[in-house]
Image (cartoon, rainbow, N blue to C red; front, side, top):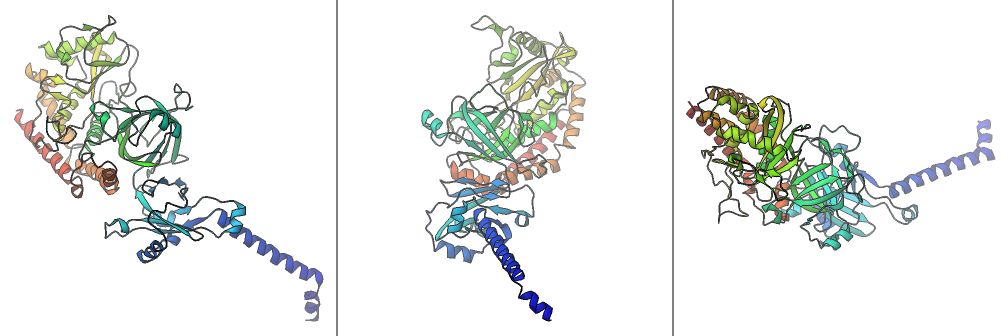
Length: 565
């Protein structure tokens, strides 16, 4: 005991104790300062109930903007729409453990500032699911000193994309909040991919880009569609940067499709994805003559711009265009598929009116005309079959019939069609046609009716039993000349479709996923709030009527097939 007493009285020992205590004090202080400089919170630790939220509301005014806009949920920086005082969080798809996995980070502050002020506080109200009142929706509370802000929080299940247009460009082009950008303009693009199966290094994809509005009659809508091209250098529009967006394909060229005039925001996406599932590489060249769409929510300069669908163009890649092959695009009802001759252009070249050359040379019009001519006027089944890939032609016939594509084909008129002349040993003079539809908003009952509807489209004008009259197609011409094999071929393919991608179960499962994306994500209502003058269906019905219509249409297709015999 005497030894211990002497040791505790030792100056060196006392000095060591003091040094240790000082070190602990310094480390604790540094940890406190660091927590102030780099504030972060576990989701579960900052959740509050409605009573606590109401207490915060009594301490601030409704028009107080967010004290900080640089808020991160894990590695995702939330998009802050100042116009509506709303933060947007794209939650990882199908993640049931969001609360236990999410760390919320606030912007770092300087060491000097951290010495002067306490750690900013954050509270998260996740909403009242039993009420639809705005006051019961999710909120993000930020407290710094005596200041408090309460902002809206949207948790979406869709990927989010933000297009940043510089203030100088906005001023120079005189842009309003519709962003009617007529010519390619430099921007920056950021996309947060929330896919469940994402396996790249970072979910955030950023790139310089150029953008312009696209569309025909739709270009005048306030919620516009865009063509987006990714760049290596934002100042040099000739550079290209190929990136894989949402697992669609690796490319620099993209389309942001706005379903502004579609009441349920479903038809083009559902139809073109259905065509992709039917027709992808189902031809003698194994060309993927189709494209895919995925829903996103778009922001421009952090301002919410609505529900969009991201896709890539139908182009030479999708048709696997080789040397001496040509790709064309039909945009009107000119009826030149029955032309007896090509016509001269102003430059003296020969062309088929209504068709634009997308890839290849003007000489390709010779093959295009010859194949159309033989298809329409030959009475020989073998010749008609030699004009095109018959698997593709049969699929297109069924696709038009099912979707009631009144803006694509009607009697002997054809519109909104890609047509490629492909090299083939069994074709006419070494060529066959490969076809692909596009622009499918007037389908499944919706159509343009002069003087009716909104924005030119009437909802469910056609009934499910409406049979689209088609008098142009290799299928039609083979039927007309009495080909004995075409009906068995149609029946075999129809049976295959009804047992796979056209089965009732497959259709129901597909539409359920679209309902989650469009409605259950909240994007439909947010888009309605943003663009109130667009076309909208009864929100509470979601896709119930659309699903019933498609299933009834399939029953009518069964009757149609029976009528062929």
